[in-house]
Length: 262
Image 1: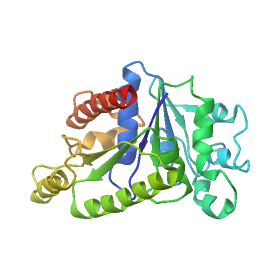
Image 2: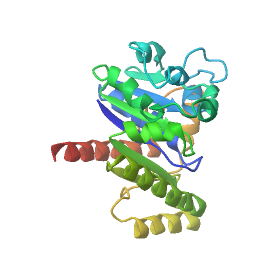
Image 3: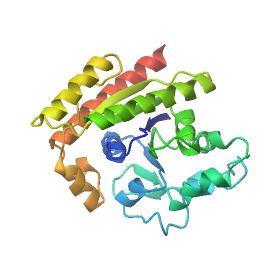
């Protein structure tokens, strides 16, 4: 199993779109893929037609056992999606109460890691969609992940948000004494606007070694896919956005193999 987290402390930068599109593309390659919704807003869950306000069982159930994960529970929480080979571990809005509920409970930062350990032989890839804030859910994702993707909208305020995310990442890695490989992915790029072009150039200048060499363009097909409850690649395999994410999948696979070969 390979575990990729998709995270940024700023909302609206394309985290959920990245998880769904990458997950769909991996599934199309014949991989067994699980996408996990760790955001109380439940955008990933809603994408596939489930209501995070009313869903009976979700990721929230994993956190109800005093830091333990009962045997067999993670598998019971997994649901199907519209994409063959792509499964979902959904979120519920109850996740928003975790911080106050779990005060003083030991081991809460490792719940997702323990849950995925039970599913290790069932999936080839796991993609973790994150809440845009530092807390127990993001700590769980960073602890479980082997690689991190940081989507960043190509606009000035999103770049400022990236600085906060990298500071958080450094802090978490220092506490865990573990280096987490990461890749910054420019999203919502619009070459027709000067602001977007300037922002991409600033990212390239500031983060030359961590930045993906391409950018995901603005693409209305992503919105169409979310409304239809399907992966973007199943809606249109050759749209500009899907082609960009296909390049990113290739890059991530190559990066993963390089790290594992060391």
